[in-house]
Each structure stands twice: as structure tokens, then as C-alpha cells.
Amino acid sequence: MRNSKPYLIAEMGVNFYDTARALNIKPIEAAKMYIDSAADAGIDCAKFQSYKAGTIVSKNSPAYWDITKEPTKTQYELFLKHDSFGEAEYQELCDYTHSKGMDYTSTPFDYASADYLQKMIDFYKISSSDISNIPFIRHIGAKNKPVVLSVGASYLSEVDEAIRVLTESGCKDITILHCVLSYPTAPQNANLRIIETLKKDFPKIKVGFSDHVAPDDTMMTLATAYLLGAEVIEKHFTLDKTLPGNDHYHAGDPGDFKKAIANFRWIDTVLGSGEKTVLDCELTPRREARRSLVLTRDMKSGEIINKDDIMPKRPGTGISPEYTNIIVGRKVKKDLKEDTILMWDMV
Image 1 (tube, rainbow, N blue to C red):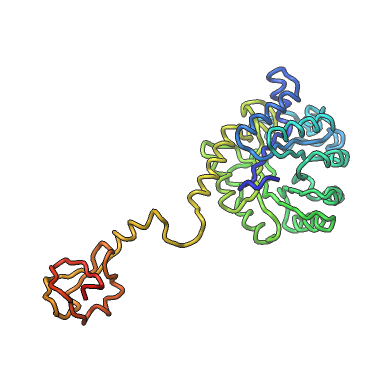
Image 2: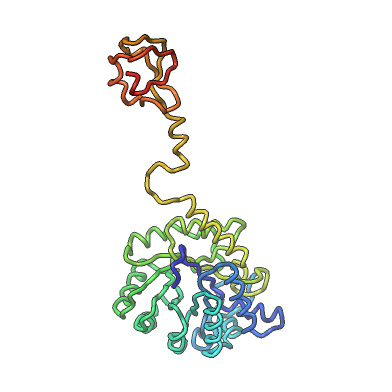
């Protein structure tokens, strides 16, 4: 995995199938268009989903998404529209993604997918929906690959159990993503402070955010997640947010991702290093805006300086007011005019 801060995953999922239908092109061609756009936007990783409808869901499983946006009534019907790819297609997408300089992964939803993806992916991504699928998590954890696990719709005890199973299976690189399993997630339900909770409760585990909040003009949801410490950020990716389908209406397009990346860089810029020191840009203001001890009257050589004879005034090029008690009681060495900034060689 790249060392980007934050590491940004474009969840392409199966959105490219809808784009292929809209453009009357092959799904593999549309998937490569998605990869091209993600690479151009500066995204770190292209992520897909690997499944077959018959192994992921029973035929009568009801929809749990916004059916005004995606009217398909059962999960099986929806997944059936998007399950034509197999090992060969995902290998082709892997090679193409790597040729564009990005990392590649695909979320497996069955054992067969988990097995054939091992030689392709840079890390495994496990869906929130499988956090209680302990045998499957154990199977993936034993494959000697980094694992990114979304933890939506779960209790901390379930997160703890999943991490324990991955660790016991031999997985040495684990990232958990705060996620709200609601499509789309209303902003008031984003609950981003969970990122802080996860970082506190699992201090040895990397923590990030998988976003289902519909993008806005500012992309502040992702910026806020980054400010709260998200090291990995995942968001659904589309080339057209107006397309029908389960994941387009809450996905970000390339422009949204570019805006998010610009926000991350701006945050890095304004946060700085955390070291409290005097910056180069502060040297002149530090000198000119601080104060020096200045005479309040004309003084003759040999006169003793009293407290009323001096006043702190800008600039700070002379003796600092912090030395007032040292200066009071000393003699001036030469005649000095009112408003003279005192220097050490004058007293």
C-alpha cells in the first residue's frame, strides 16, 4: 500500500456496469474508464467487488437501500445484474490498475473469490456485512496479506472479536474503517467521532473511514474524518452521479475526489508540524511588534534611571521590559533624548 496521508480508496464496486449500459460499451471497458479517471484524480487505490449472486444472498432477501433511487426489490435481483466478472476479468483490471500506478483490491464475498484474488490484490478489503462471518475472516486473515475491515452496524465487542480472529490467523497489518451501513448516510448519522473512539480503544490498529454520505460542494465529511485521525478513507466512485443504481447517488465523481484531496493537502498545510517555535515569517513581526524600554524624558550622562523614566514601547529592538528591575537604578552613560530606545551599551 502507498504511504499517502490519508490513503484514499475509490470504491468502484460495480458502478461501471451501469456506465457500460448507459454508453453501450463492454463492462470491462467501462471499468477501465473508471480506473483512468481515478488515476487522473490522484487516488491511491481502485477497489472493486467480487461475488456471484447465488453465493452472497438468498433469492428473497429484501432491499435495504433507498428504493426511490434504486427500485430493485430484492438483493438477489440487484446482485444478479452485476456478477458477470470472474477471475480473468479481475486479473485484467488488476494489471491495468497497476499499470496506472495505483494499488488494486476487490472485496471478496465468498471463499472462491477470496482465494483467486490473493495473487492479485495489494490488500484484502472485508465488508461490514461480513464482520460477524468469523470463519470467512479467519480464512482471509491466514492469507498473509494486509486487511482493511469496515465495521459498520457493529458493536465494539464485534470489532474486537474480528480483530482478534485476524490477529490469531496471522494477519500482521490490520486497518479498521468506521462506517455507517446506510445508503446514503444522512450527515447527522455520520457519527465521525467514532473514529476517535476506535483509535482510543484499538491503539495498535490503523483507523480510517468508509463514507456513505452524499458528496456536497465542500467535501467536508472526508475532511472532517481526516482531521479526526482517519488514516485510510474509502468512498464510492462514479463517473456520473445521476445514473440509476444502488451506489451512484451517494458516490463521489472525479471532481469530488480531487476536491477532497485538495482539502487534505490544505489541512496538512495549515496544521503544520506541531513544534512550537518562532517561524521565519514571524522574525520581523517578533522584532517590530514586541516592546523595548524607552525613555520618557531627556536624561544627562550619569543620571540614575528611575521607574518613571522608562516605558515599554515598540519596537522590540532594544532592552526588553523583562529586564526592568535590572535597569532601574542604573546610570546612563551619555546624554539621551526622550523616546530613546535603550540599548545595553547606554547604561
